Image 1 (cartoon, rainbow, N blue to C red):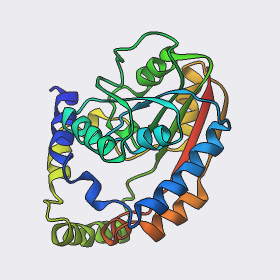
Image 2 (cartoon, rainbow, N blue to C red; image 1 turned 60 degrees about the vertical axis):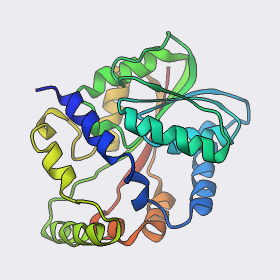
Image 3 (tube, helix red, strand yellow; image 1 turned 90 degrees about the vertical axis):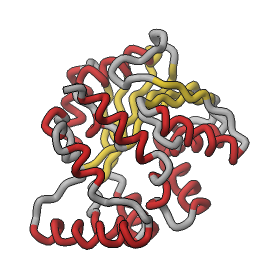
Image 4 (cartoon, rainbow, N blue to C red; image 1 turned 120 degrees about the vertical axis):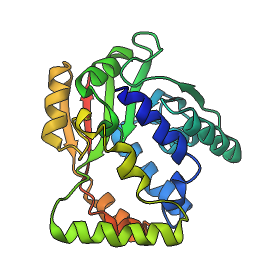
Length: 248
């Protein structure tokens, strides 16, 4: 079974609807997320940044607005096309390119920062992926990973997810069961399909040889997500988010 092919096909299908279940206010969201990124980067210097699993370009475009030089890479060509459209609307320049997070088509020690957001659960070999991200980071550079625990098996959350699917169907006009059916045969090939914990990521970072590893539990982001996401998202999700940093 070609796990990555199935992952790619799903996100190709989702590219046109992915942003519809997003935040209520884009301006408010961009301001909030820029503060998170600035606090993590801690410099106004122009950096060369790689956004792995860029999707529709959410992080890549924020960094471009902050005057950094950005490359966004994704396994889904459909997502990349949507990202390019989003960049054009904002008159921003980002080098969006097709590639595999576990086998980047990039030279060694090219970037100051490699970042990804909500990507780890889609990757068959997370340890290999982090080693690959470390390969393309300059000595002294950083790996920045934003992730969380996605699946709660409690009866309460199962009921909420069921109700959330009804809202998705009604408000976003898309099939909310497409995700479940598409991933049914490959979810056991994805170690972090249900999400990751800070300890999971610290272990992987340590195995990859990263140093000065730190974790921010992003408490303010959790509150922001609950207040500013769509109703269907808030019903279906109870976010447990964090940002992990490691230095090469």
